Amino acid sequence: MSRNKSIQTTVKALVDNHGQKFPFIPIHERRLPATASLAEIIESIRSVIFPGYFGSPLAKEDSLVYHIGIGVEKIFNDLSHQIFDALFFQSEKMDSAQTRTKARRLTYTFLNRLQRIKQLLSSDVKAIFDSDPAAKNLGEVIFCYPAVKAISNYRIAHELYLMDIPLIPRIITELAHAETGIDIHPGAEIGEYFSIDHGTGIVIGQTTIIGKHVTLYQGVTLGAKSFSVDETGHPIDIPRHPIIEDNVTIYSNSSILGRVTIGHGTVIGGNIWLTHSVPPYSRILQTKAVKLDLTDGAGI
Image (cartoon, rainbow, N blue to C red; front, side):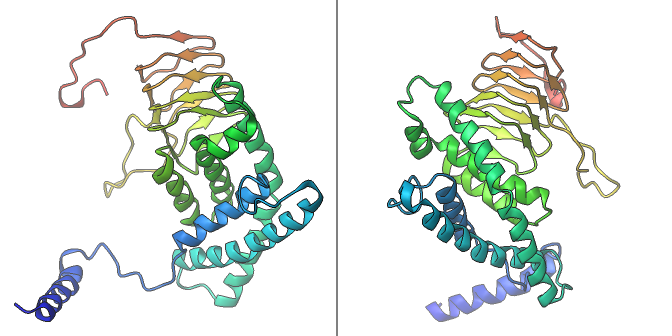
């Protein structure tokens, strides 16, 4: 078979097969937010929150207003376009002019939240520095630590999530997930002074609530034990992830599953499997191997 004939055969098979065997996957004919553009927007936001570390290396104290001004204007222009596309992704019946106005209004709202995002991220950087004796200074934490990238993407995405902007928050957190191995759903609620050490393999589910001064080590999962489904078999979006109160430390490769509460001041050791609540100031340690019969999912 010739090259052109082979290509034509493949194209025809894909087109014919799509509608016949996969009718649940619609053809998407509208504009979508651009992943590459959103990645650039995140870098622009980092550059106004941590000037000199991201964006232009020429940012100095006496030119700070200029550099931040340029950055904020760029964020507004770029983000409003992406929000416009995201709104059309959600509903094709929207009026273009009205949607453009709504996108600009939502972008202004987001810009007004940048100061709060900066305050939270500054506390996160301090938490990471305070918990890691290997860190030489705050600048090293900001510039080098993957946790800062993952948490900053989350903090930005969470504000957009609270504004009911479709698709974009998930894209932003998945960008960090792909780069750092840290998976934080934009719907999770995380308090200030949040520290992630190493971080690879961390999973934080959508309805997780994390208080202040919490530290997680690599491999920690804050997930769901099970979920309810509706009459069609589709999962119901209800609270199903843990509540972690203030001043909790969770060491590496521990899994906390279900809508359970970990009381404030608790320390959970490594390699713990926990599916029940614990009171404040608990110390949960694995002292010996425990054999469980988990046949057919029993016990999970």
